[in-house]
Image (cartoon, rainbow, N blue to C red):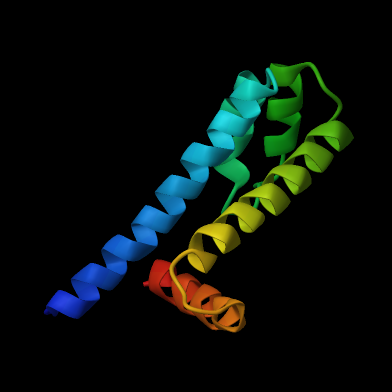
Length: 110
């Protein structure tokens, strides 16, 4: 597939938004003394857990499966907020954020 300079730029933009958001999220967890939790749970940021995955993470973290599920939910919410903030820094008005978020998801799905 031939890539145009524009598509290359857009792909790089999408990757930068994700990478920056993950980096900030990692730093936040480290500041809270939860670096190990972040390392264990980051795999669930953008994909669903397969059967039994939370059980393995629960054992690794010394938590219940329910606590891991809640921690993943919080992690995903915070990640979405960070991605949204990062996207927000690239648009002229807050009204454009939702459209850019949809476009980001589209780019990442390719």
